[in-house]
Image (cartoon, rainbow, N blue to C red):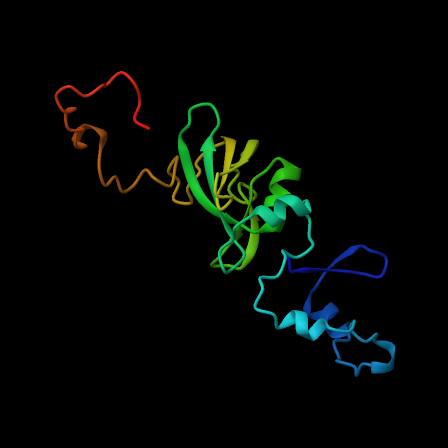
Length: 189
């Protein structure tokens, strides 16, 4: 099957060589008298060195304003198994992916390599059912607690952190003993 296009009756039609020949993709000149002029001062605002507010979009304005995104407009999203605390993977979300995750109950990520959205499990069947979503204290990372069905990693491993263990728990250095006379009954401030 090929890609689909919407028809005038809002039905999806498969694009084939035959149907593509029937489409009219010519670029037509725009009648500028029909296009309204931008409001006064628009160009000045566009060239300001002041950071622009986040674009109006699917997220509530107060949430969108708090998010600290990468220059590409992305947030790291950590997926964690909700009942065991196991860290499953790190993906990337923009505002639209976060909105879809919050409203569909399925994790949606932005693929930096393919430059498209993907819903975890749509092709593999290894679905992430969203249980909760939290923003970290700096508003620059999202923690998505999920019920993972199958493998979280594209390699087939349970998590994306199974393959290269750099420091195993049994070989980790131990903390040095507390200095003599130190109060070890209360946590450090």
